[in-house]
Length: 185
Image 1 (tube, rainbow, N blue to C red):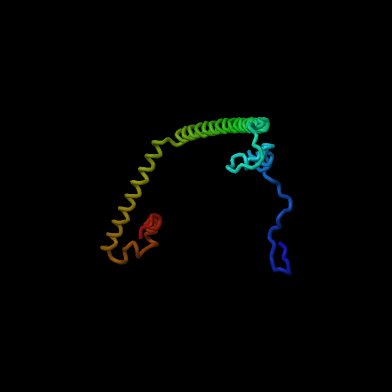
Image 2 (spheres, one colour; image 1 turned 90 degrees about the vertical axis):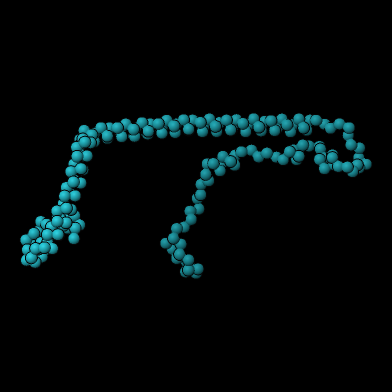
């Protein structure tokens, strides 16, 4: 980081002088330019050809077709070069799409294979039914704990103060721990 004292500007990251142009831009620069149609024909004055004013100059009865033939031959050559370039680019794109499709199919196959292996290993290690039974037992146990805590709280309201659970945390430490663990107050 440099500071220019004259301008009080802090330069955090100086711009590098060397800038590479992108390959796409270079390709576009290499494309031949097409000249406008009217300016490529030699020996033809387009301004006076179709005007209503007739000058003293004699208008020829026929036009020399060679300039038109030259122009259309150049245009035909240009179109052939353009079509060859487009065909080449389309072939490259087609090949890249085929490679991409193959790559995606490989990934899909690999993911499917790993998914089925993982499911198989999971079923082998734990057993789906066993997990369901354990989850059901945990849920039933939580319901029972909730019932027990609510009944203890109701019982605590009727017994004398010296026997109440909430007044004797040391004596009934497990019940207090159970209430804290399951967020019962």
